[in-house]
Image 1 (cartoon, rainbow, N blue to C red):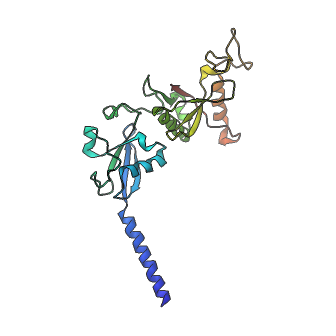
Image 2: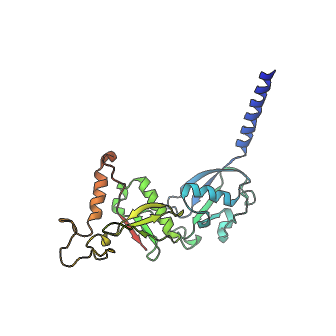
Image 3: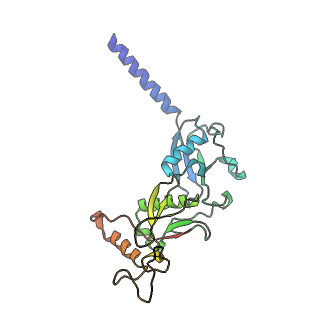
Length: 248
């Protein structure tokens, strides 16, 4: 008797799990600034709020909910952002397969200019703080490093300033993502030792000055990139490195 009772509980448990699974909605998130128009799948409950969706995206994209704007359907035409308290059902989402549009605030001025999306290898604006991978090395830059650069540019877009490292002979700046977590280090070529904008006093006093014999100011970055490229299979543990352009 007890054996059949236990089986009954298991069946009930499986039925409950199956019912809960059927309640899930699989929706898609499309970044309006993504030139490739890619969509990210997201599994949610029908009663989830816009704030719930933003919290889930924060875990995946490392963008704070306050820096996200969510749009759906005809609301996009009037540029009305879905409020955090609104549920997906209130917005008209009752079935799987629907697409929400995501805008990272600060990444562009408004939705009208969203079609002018920018790749990871070009700066967005001559006035905005931004960073990108140099187009000459894009093909040699690992995808994981490109994602870190993308996280850093989101941090810059919401106003997080580069932080000068306390040590070293050249300018080295910590870059943070939207969660204020450090994701990389940027070393400007014109702030290398004996370069004209060195922030630590190692500036040239005459022609041909250099901190290391045979290395001209501004060339250290090239040597670091070459060291990473030649470190096949990570044998020497050289950190991921690429050439990048930045403005602040």
